[in-house]
Every structure is written in C-alpha cells, then in structure tokens.
Length: 200
Image (cartoon, rainbow, N blue to C red; front, top):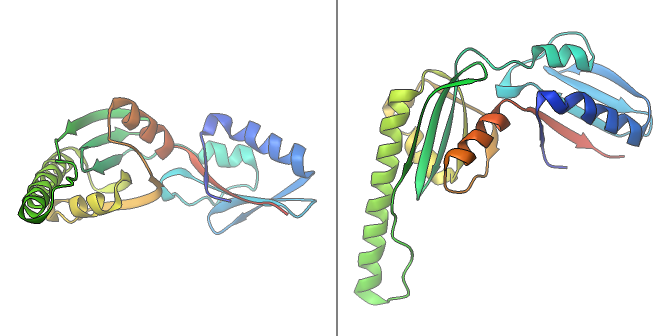
C-alpha cells in the first residue's frame, strides 16, 4: 500500500481501527520507527514527521509524545504556474510567500510559431523558478524541508547555490498550483506521521 499520512491527533484512532480489523497487535521499535504486527500477519510501520528517528518505548503513546515538529523546518512547493515557501518554528508558520507566474500553455501551432512559443514558455518557467529560489533563499533556514509540486521544477529551484543547506525529507507532496489552502495542507502533511501498511 502507498504511504498514508496520519496527523498526530488521529494516530490513536488509526491504530485502534487497525487492531479492530486485524486483531491483537504487538509493537517494536525497528529502524527508528514503530512497527505494529497483528495476529493475522498484517503490519504497519509508523515514522515520525520530517525524517526524525524514534528510539523510545514501543507503544503508540511514546511515538505520539515524540511526534513534535522541530524548532526550524520549511515547506517548498513549486509548479510552473507558481510557488509557495514557508518557514516554521515547531507547528507555527512564521513567514511565508506565495507567488503566481503566468507560463504560456502549449499551442497547436506548428513550425516556427511552435518553437517561439516553446522558447517563451521555457523563459517564463525559468523566471518563475528564479523567483521561487529568491524567496526560498530569503525565507528558509538550513534544516528539513518538505517539498512538492512538480519534481523538475523543485529540482530547478533547489539547484540554487543559496539553498545548499536544506535537507529534503519525505513525504513528497503531489500538489496543484500552490495557493494558501494548498500551502496550509502541505504544512499539516509535513507534520503528519508516515505510515506504511502491509495487509496479510
């Protein structure tokens, strides 16, 4: 199954539902994560947000107690049509910037017109990435960063030498063009636990 993002406030209920479906479950700390294994052979592995490693007691309460975001982390979302950057201190967003850029859509025209439109589109996209990198360099601080949007666009922005101190962590967020609601959801997802489930 794909990775499931579970907000800390919902983890206990999520585990209760897992136990109800699969039976009594035993817990162990494995590889910096909490592993639950049910009597029917199904299992889950729950990891702390922002690539933090867990080495506490093997139970849900212990994992939840450790599921607090770090003092300094960030979010970077980039698509051709815009970007969103946020710096956070723990759960609190302290600075952010959302920008939209017009990037020419594809055209059905052929020949030189098509090449001219393609060049214009590439130039507009490059300008959008440069703007995103400019704001990311101003807002973000070295540390873990959750990214999302378009992978090529994010890689272009992260290629800026001013962003070398950033450490990209899971999860990758497949988001539409960044708006405030999209950024808010990305911040919530960044603070969620990543849970991998294996059904027997």
